[in-house]
Image 1 (cartoon, chains in turn cyan, brown):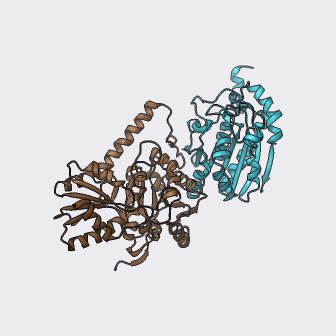
Image 2 (cartoon, chains in turn orange, brown; image 1 turned 30 degrees about the horizontal axis):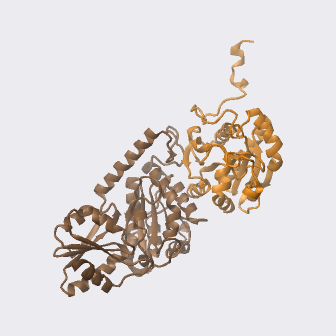
Image 3 (spheres, each protein chain N blue to C red; image 1 turned 120 degrees about the vertical axis):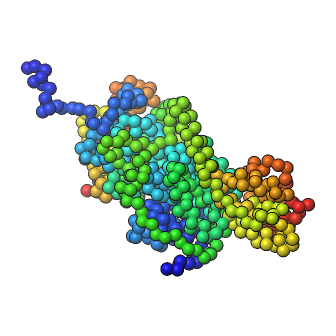
Length: 254
Length: 360
């Protein structure tokens, strides 16, 4: 069999989504962001929404997400992405509007905007990257930092007496009447990536079908912030993050 | 057809004018003394007529970020609040100015600092005209002194905001917001279609049409060389606005020996004070800045050659007086008159200040 026999369209098993451009990503090797970006690009393409999607990037590592996906973008102030998205979706109901936010952005400074946008049942999709740490500012404690976990601002480990408990925003979201679909996924294995993509697709479809708000939490690694190799970070996530942040659908108003 | 004259509050005039000007959206949070803006919009239900979206946000912070989001798509949107609420909006206003988005912010000022009072004040002059949030930026600031101007300035503010891709503010106070006057509302103008918005705002992020690059609305730039260029661009735009958009009104200045400079409700008080003073043989005129930024420096400088002194009347401890001092190059006397914390002065008090502080 020659090379020419193999390189045929019917044998194509993988290609980079067209929406994902060639700009070199600023993310650390091993980071989950790149995988989730790719999934979002694939879903937008598969839905044929390239010309009708508006993404809202957060403050945090994904602030520069607008450099990687060739759609229209708005960069929101820290925590305010759900408010920004609410207004856009109400004024452009036929657009696909999603936010992409980290744990500090969504579950700390933007708690009010997140809860109220979800509770109003805004027809938006929120992609929530939970890696239990502030990546962009250099590894400080997040609202989702696990008890005992060490960060730059809790160098002796998160102490509940001092810092309180890790916040389960996705569980809170599931209790709100306005949410249609609330799920917690991850992207550290091929199987998990496939599931996460389905979740993102469902959230985006809900947005277009007027079903209400959807929240897709992706439990992620920050191997730089956690000071681990990418593979050790994946293992640590399985052993420590998944027990506190269990994977699966929390709510699905079919 | 004769013009329809209606009687209403300044706050209500803002709401009606917004609907009639073809605004696409309003996002706000209740606060005294401006809650009638949102209440009137809720009562009018423009989403059933013009299609205008009206949303009560969870906070002033959320409301201004909704404005940011909507303005970035090219839609014509506004928010309104009063002093403590406008303080909360400052971060968002800075982002809007940084990203060069057109929108309207209405501030119906009340006395501060802090939670302050619900009574009228003009103590947010510095905040409105000198920036307010972080970074070097300016708002186009219009100061209505009547309910008619509350109605008229909505359309004007939107026109200026879109002309310069810059946030505009209507800076009113509790008097102008709450008092009822006769007003002729602007004619109905249909909301722009999506095609018109896309054509008018090629920069807007409302869905990347084939053949164009993505539109990215952001105020972020980590490279300081590019960030400085952005600042230089903003300052050039502000110079252009200063050159083209100064608005003020001069009343009885032709023979004036003394000048009162006052804006908003204070200009109305000043007009009565001038009437009283002139009955007593004191030749005094009024310069009323309509745009607080850009400020009428040249107009005041020109008048300063023909007068003996200036009384700056404001509902604060003396803020606009600093701009009047910047305008005047000679040595004429410039004094402040005004009350704070929600007290509105009587015209007689102003005449007393004119005689005691300025003419003595």
